[in-house]
Image 1: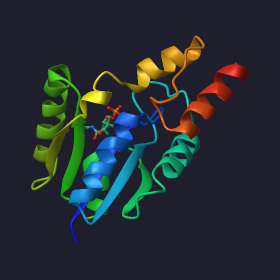
Image 2 (image 1 turned 60 degrees about the horizontal axis):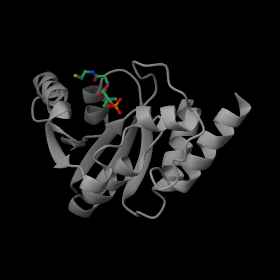
Image 3 (image 1 turned 120 degrees about the vertical axis):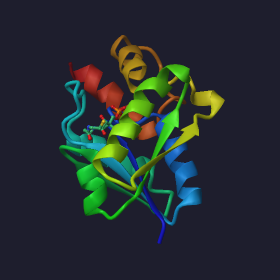
Image 4 (image 1 turned 90 degrees about the vertical axis):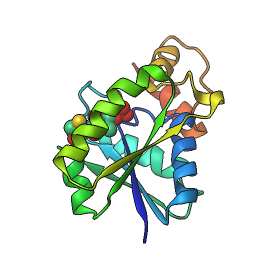
Length: 160
Ligand code: PNS
């Protein structure tokens, strides 16, 4: 059984995240979208909200599940017996940090490899931070994030 992890903050998930996970799911028997419980930046959405919108947005893919982790990604990978992490790369600017993380993870857990998927050009400008900023000031994010995420953003900012 070949399994891969797609880790992230998913605060919130964008169409770019969904695209990378869908593509990973075509190459692996099982893909676990791993939501970090406590990201370095204070998240807009709680862990439960991030997991729940991601689970709904990935419901159409049979071999994908959503889980969460805290602490080191390598510990989670080890606990799930997974040796491959799949990450999307939007631009060269992503590469430097992603390379550093990939090498650190591999130094911490021998045999853990990171595979990079170039983002689909349609989504290469997308980031969770930009989506939050646009939604905060009332801009439309339909078509950039799954419909349930757009709804959750609208509800969040309507109530704040
Ligand atoms: O969506 P993001 O914010 O780019 O995801 C980053 C994430 C969660 C994948 C990364 O911060 C991570 O793996 N954090 C876990 C902590 C860890 O293992 N740090 C050492 C790896 S260099």
